[in-house]
Image (cartoon, rainbow, N blue to C red; front, side):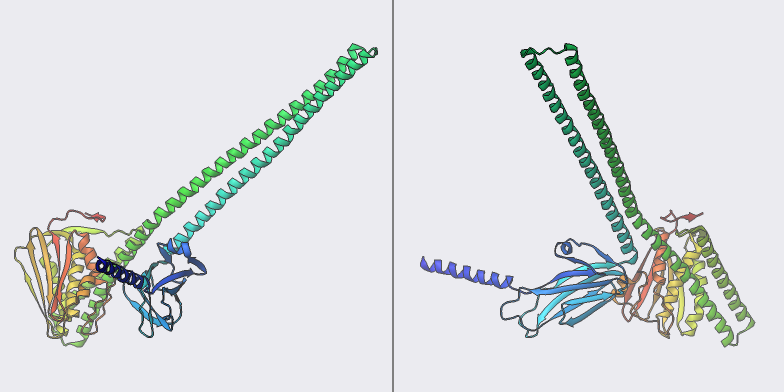
Length: 511
């Protein structure tokens, strides 16, 4: 029995020691955040769930290490890491403060860790997330200013109402007290007169009864007049109190209207951000649309100047230049319409057309760039492709983006294959190359706005990072879908599919 008790006690001691060791692991904590001199710490720091700052704001983080064991508080360093969706920056420092300014807009995560130079301990990390968004930060600042003004108005209204009411009550109390005092004096005076009259009659002194009655009425009338005056003054004070109460109600009504305005501002902030985002996307799309045909014209002109071409070949190139120039003019007109109407919606001009004809035209125009890089480009278009409903210019832009990208990222001597077929009431177009291929990260981010792929164009061609994002926008507008399959070093297949029958989308459609 004693052995069992000893085992239990030893087990409890071991568990207690392990628990004590676990509790004594050093850890990092953020003690204060300062934004342009405004400090957040203690309770305000813990309640700071969403910090939004402007790009030009100075953000300072203060931190420390806690729970360091006795004897292990020697030299140690902090490891500071700040990252957003695109980049990560890390540093090792002995300072307990980090400061950042002119951060690009985005969502950030700050991670603070620490370690002992003698490798005796490694502190637990702490992190803090914040966002850099100049427009949102300025709107939030305006909302805070409105709220502060609202609080000041409420405090002023309450203070004014309380002060006026207190003064009115004090005046009323003084007047009522004076009236009561006057009544008491009057009563004592009447009693005194009656008492004297009684004494004079006892002494045999004769006093005219008419004279005694006249004196009593005068005093009584005087007291009644004073009482009436006091009642009138009290009525006036009550009227002033009622007026103050009405004024206080008006101020509360104004405060409620201000609060409603604040709520409307808060709701409209998101709408403004969405409208601005749509406008930015639309103009980025149009600029990209103009850039591609302009580059094609340059290539065609270079071809005319660099080679001894026959009259037929020259005429074909001139026709291509004229067609591409017409496209630029059409896009420029679209920009003018958008600026005139101040719209931010993507407008589709839906028509019945043959996908095969679009593919052939785009392949023919891009063949110049393919030949210059010694790339063979072939097509495999199904014979049973039906006429479909779509915006010819927008779909032509999609096909042009995919084919020009395949040529850009394929080495000399490579191959590009363009396929088109119909499947379950959808027309599918695939552009396959045996070029550089994409990594897994590239595949995940391929259609994001401004995404730069790790692979670079093989002949130094320009790549803005907008082509695939624009492709997805245009395909989505047609209720279609777009995807990519790729193996790094072995090539890629970019594809999209559109319904044969256009059913409308979440954009304004011009029929």
